[in-house]
Figure 1 (cartoon, rainbow, N blue to C red):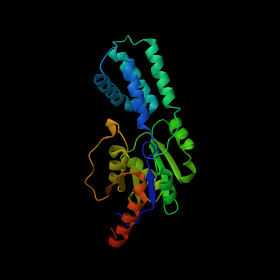
Figure 2 (cartoon, one colour; figure 1 turned 180 degrees about the horizontal axis):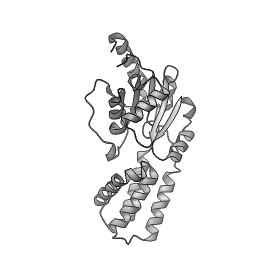
Figure 3 (cartoon, rainbow, N blue to C red; figure 1 turned 135 degrees about the vertical axis):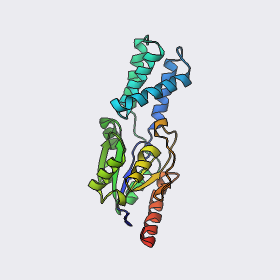
Figure 4 (cartoon, one colour; figure 1 turned 120 degrees about the vertical axis):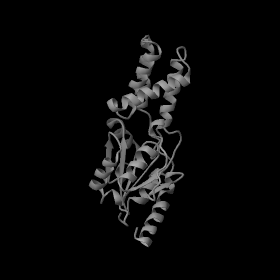
Amino acid sequence: MSNTLTTIGFDADDTLWHNERYFALTQAHFAQLLADHTDRDTLMARLLAAERRNLPHYGFGIKGFTLSMIETAIEVTDGRAPASVISQILDAGRDMLSHAVDLLPQAADTVEALRHSYKVIVITKGDLLDQERKLAQSGLRDLFHGVEIVAAKTPQTYTRIFGQHGTGADQGLMVGNSMASDVIPMIDAGGWGVFAPHGPIWEIEHAQPPASARYREIDNIGQLPTLIDRITGDLEDTGA
């Protein structure tokens, strides 16, 4: 592995700006709509199962989430979900697709601090139009040297992106709030993975931390520049 770090990849949702809290609010509303048909815990379990089933078909993002809510509503009502309920679910999905972008503290300052010494890129998954909208409204777009909106985050994805935008995954670092998507596959690609947890994490994104010398964890995104300084200093000292 190389003793040089040249490229920093940033996840977007719940790494640069708030996102999961809008899903939580919508799920609470969804539970209220179906309260006469099932309890919240059962409904959430059925919804999660629908999301897992539908990921290969709809991918990640709000549109797939909305379709999974509709499917779940039909299931728990034995096919008798009122049209008014379906209409409200669709309204909730549209609201999610138009919510304001609220940056996490220190997100902009962190990107600004790193962009002069490293190539900085956004690597995010989800609905193409929604992710483009959020990036444009965030005010961060011009700070990045590249943007990648992908269907899934795999070792092959990171190998391609860090080879295209940087000098290879082994000279790259990925930071994000998902162990399963941002950390583990990046380390499997030969790079550094930094876990920056923020708020509730979608069950599907949970995973155990990897046993790797290239794994790190920070409390918030503002700690990233200091961590990177330590990593680069250690690499220079050891030649690792």
